Image (cartoon, rainbow, N blue to C red; front, top):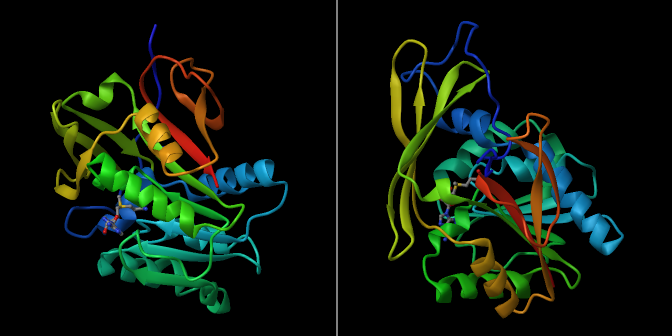
Length: 284
Ligand SMILES: C[S@@+](CC[C@H](N)C(=O)[O-])C[C@H]1O[C@@H](n2cnc3c(N)ncnc32)[C@H](O)[C@@H]1O
């Protein structure tokens, strides 16, 4: 039977029992996003451990494409004095929010972060050991030619023994028009809205909404105009871009037998799941 795994890494399910400080009027959408879908410690651990296993040494310089508030980069830098990062995003709004919320209190360590308000196809200041694009953001590239162009630039940009890591979601449920509600411990409901999907072009329109215990709502806090890409398509494009080896890392199954356990290991075939999240790790 097909399994149901979690669609967004690090979702924090809760029961909204305690009194919530959140309402649509007072809540900050970037804080809500972070509480709903981001798990920076786990992500940094995966990226660091994967590089270490492949290259038999520690990675120090990191690049976060589509960085938004750059929470991942802030977490990366927190690993130690030798760790540095660069973040790329075309929108100054989340970047400014991130600077104020994740970097302002870091003191001198914040100097090890470089922000670029620029397209992800622009080069880094220094070649990264690990470069990543998280939460499927690279799905803004809708044609094979655009995706290949992006992957080629990423390959040329990383260090000689660097790795490029992207995550993706898949499974038959990704193509369904549906809304999925998740109660978040902090005291609100996160809604992943798969609003529309066009099979001929594989384009899709997704939204994130938030709902609050007082009945108020924040509709379309975030909107994603994407093409849905499959693992196989992306693996082939990474190989065409010149990466030496491309591996899929698949999530294990939790004790309940249906949800993901947050542990990703190398896998050749995968398994039939209604929805899943996986990584592709490309070696230069
Ligand atoms: C879903 S958010 C990603 C936030 C964060 N990386 C995460 O893991 O949750 C997508 C971000 O990509 C940025 N973006 C979209 N197209 C871009 C491009 N071509 N180059 C750089 N940033 C881009 C948007 O401004 C937005 O902040």
